Image (cartoon, rainbow, N blue to C red; front, side, top):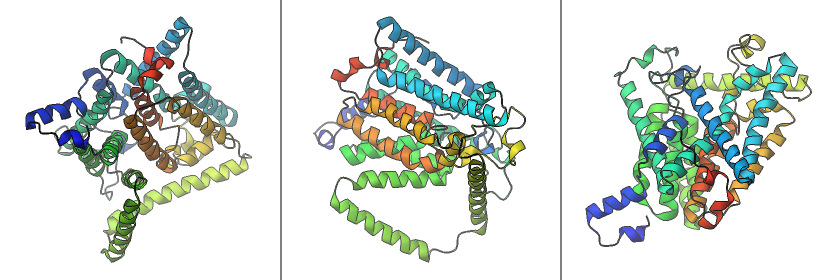
Length: 423
């Protein structure tokens, strides 16, 4: 909805109905898929990712559904005798990443390949694209329904997080988190959906003056600040929004420059923060620097040949080789460098080719803006979160938007848009 449309002399009730039909569309099946895709109900080893609604096996069940959807897309393409290059490249890229990491871990440490594939199962979240598109095209093929699914999911995550932090389902402070950590009630999972909700809403406001998207921006921001409490994600999201805001007009550059100057002065004059929070931040940085140092030492000793990833299910994983504070997920791109070494540029080139296959299709202005906004956010997040291993949820969501907002003339060219599968 544009600002011009809002200014038309319509009744308040009619305006609310228009907002609901164009911004807050609720599609039950898409909403259910997005609830799972956001990883909120997945059980993980990190205490910050454990809560009373996270159950073991949910991640594996969802990945199995994603694999089934991807397989159905391949079968549909074989039946019709026509494939879309982007779908094939995506399947080949994800399979190569998982298998390549497993083989390198086998060659270096002797870890059975099945354990390596299990360790890299999160990269299969890329296949969530096919499950999202199956629900999208089968039940509600309006782009607004996909936006609404993200918005409603972020809202439900926020409500559930607040309920658990209030102690309605149990005491979160009983988790295995150091007593001096001020984030005892932090629930890390779901931060990707919060950030996506904020970025999509910000793009719609900045690019199209669609202020009805302000509520999802506030919901996502509250989720990041109160529930996930992810400082790095909040900072990266702020930078992404500012950059997207700045590229459209000169006066915005001047406004941002003034804000940076004022913010710097305020930071210099701000009282010393509590020592407890500083201690936690220093400890986190120290662990990541220590892990990165060990990674570069290991790569140097191994002639910069990647060593894959070890699973905790096999001889205690990396804890046996290094120590209990060694986690590839903590160091983003550096962790992916450990996996593939000198071959990492090939992996990133594969990701770029995959995205190009989808972005080269014609999209309407809304789709292009949302796509480039999310792309900017995910690239800025790469140094700390990685580009491939743990980012499948992000790229699947981004590609889904590029397909949902594709112009009608480009729709028949995709295999995914012809997928009609009932689960």
